[in-house]
Image: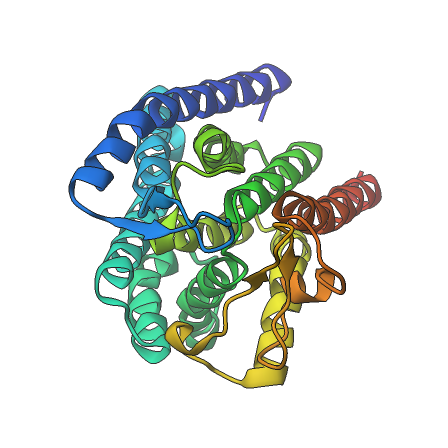
Amino acid sequence: MYLGEYQALLLISGICGLLAFLTTYFTMPKLINKLHDADIVGKDIHKEKKPIVAEMGGIGILFGFIIGIFIGIIIYPALQFQLLVTLIVILLVGIVGMVDDLVMLSSKEKLILLWLAGLPVIWIAPPNVGIIYMLSMPVAVSIAANLTNMLAGLNGIESGLGAIAMISLTASCIIMGKGDVAIITMAMLGALIAFLIYNRHPSRVFPGDVGTLIIGACIVLVAFIGRVRVIAFIVLIPNIIDSILKFYSAGVVERQNHAPTQIGEDGKLIAPEGGFNSLIRLVLRRPMSEKNVVLIVWLFGVLFGAIGVILAYVLNTRIV
């Protein structure tokens, strides 16, 4: 790919990201009102007054991402196949998230449905790979989607971590000359940043599973399409740590059986006695405001995101 063509691809990626941002940003106010009207709401249990907040706001992320990818397909048809596969997988994962938000699937049901939703990723498998490798690709979609869905519950934590991961992946792919996936990362980044404006503390909307699941699925798609699997793994380490802590302390526990993080009289969050461990509760060694807990978890994401970028630079230098 010539330098001028590569620069053009990065410009197109920026355009896709901007349009995804604008789509989500201007969609969210109307969507929030519609969700309230449809009584798709929940209590923000980490506030003293327990305000009612719209749920399933991740539909706005999904909508912005779809527009960004469609624009990429139109402007840069050379990547049409990869972008269409990405769009299909993210749409299917988003549908699974919507169903889970509405009827609350069991962990087993969700894993199976996410594996099925990830099957189209096999179309982008490298040539001459075995059946085990191909079947492991949708497994990776299912696992990563669950990882980004598990580290959740505080204002802005999911969308913020997702945006940090996308920034790291975008920078890494640009450093390594893999601009063909920058359209994907920028489209998701634009949608997530726009959503974060409404999802940050105090949240006006929660992403729901439709929003959290597609973040992990997008990371896996970038990993396979851009051949940056190790870097994708690194940016997911905060989510991996969280899942290990939960499984080690409580095994597979359904969400309705989780003891929620408590709130003290001073408005600070407190980890409940007993129950499962998690990255959030690891941070809550002492009472802390919700904003500060989220900020610390974001810093975990920044740390591993930076490690991913440094690794990309080192690998690119060795290749050169």
